Length: 236
Ligand code: CTP
Ligand code: CA
Image 1 (cartoon, rainbow, N blue to C red):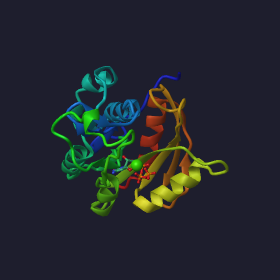
Image 2: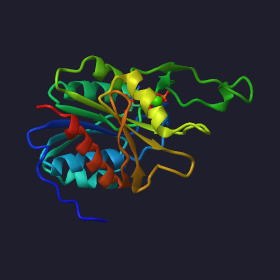
Image 3: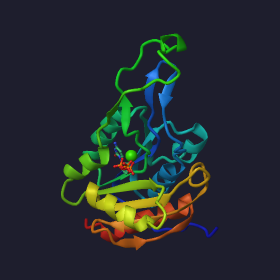
Image 4: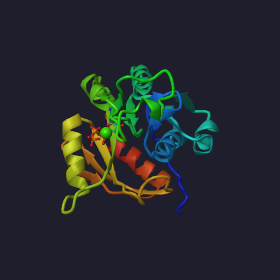
């Protein structure tokens, strides 16, 4: 891999990056989660710090080993979040003084309607199927975009499984318009693609839905491309 040598071109910027995946409890021993490792979010945080930014990394269930580079960097402050509601609180608070917010976390869209205080047992089942009632969570990214201050930039991520004949760019375009984010970076995922990997390939679209970059490489390399795209639209 090429050595990463960048100017301190994010000096003076306060950035917030969310990483990992939120989990929604079902009972004291179970949860609904997702396969996000947090590697891409941590790479974004460390890349920003090395380019001179002050970084708050809000980590949802990121393994210590994945967090190591961020823990070691003096310009990265780490906060932890468990559920989507926790993450929403942490991001909203941090966003107040942020120039850029990057929502790289995989956010649980739903939480469990009646969390059980006791472990759910099979005895309580009426048949061999059972139903878990879910309630929609807040859309953190959409809320950030609605509350955006002048000059503040909001960046979304999307892990997509495009249908046959549908492009990743088209899905990214629809999503950026729906959320009203300044940039959205989409990557393709599948049973054997995307998660835990050390490499990534992104399609980055701007607020109008136009493709501005299609970086691929290590998660650190594509992180650099995301910050390049942020800088290209940032007006101090
Ligand atoms: N996101 C968020 N809050 C949510 C759900 C998603 O902030 N409740 C953010 C993610 O962090 C990501 C972006 O929104 O930056 C896109 O997430 P995605 O799951 O692709 O979008 P959804 O609107 O949830 O659409 P889908 O139905 O495809 O899951
Ligand atoms: Ca979602």
